[in-house]
Structures are given as structure tokens and as C-alpha cells.
Length: 126
Image 1 (tube, rainbow, N blue to C red):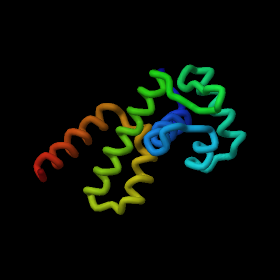
Image 2: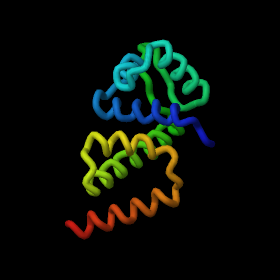
Image 3: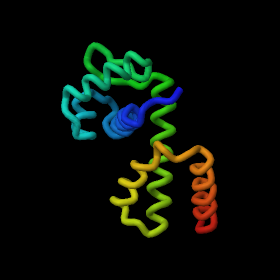
């Protein structure tokens, strides 16, 4: 199932926030992404309706297995692409921003080739 890039961004943000904070609420996503509270509220409702997140009575957001899978895939791409761009000599902040731009649109085939190349380089340097 193909989901929109914005949904992937929300799921990735929830995963990153969970790693940093342990528990995630909508306000954390607001602060992380810089979107308005109403925008995040609408997005969380859509993600719940599509089975990607659940929200408990305390307002804490958890990823469902389907949401977790998408978030992990995007976040993995983000980390690897950021590191790859840094190793090419791109400043870290630019590398992270560029990784965010391409992590969604890169074909699996191209990503795997970049991954193979990047991991080969890392192994050579070790």
C-alpha cells in the first residue's frame, strides 16, 4: 500500500520522538515538525483511521505494526542517506535536509545500490 509522503513524515517523526522521549503526544509532533495543532490533529485522525497509529485515553500515540514498518523503513533510509551524503563531504545539516527530501522518492533499486556502496565504503574504512 502506498501512502503519502506527509504520512510517512508523521510516522517517521513519531518513531524518532519515541526513541528520544519514550512516549509521544500530538504536541510533541507539533513541536518536532512545526505544523499547527489543528493540522497535526487532522493527520493523527487520518493515521488512526488507516490503522497506522493508536492513541490511548491519555493522548499518547503508538505506532501499529503497519505504522512501525513504514516509519522504520523511512527512518532507516534517512539515517543511511544522511551518513552517505556526509561521507561525500556535505555538511551534516545539509545532508540531513537533503536526505529528508529524497528518502521518500528514491526507488528501492537505487536505494539498495546506494546502501551497498555506502556499506562497502564503511567496511573498507573499518
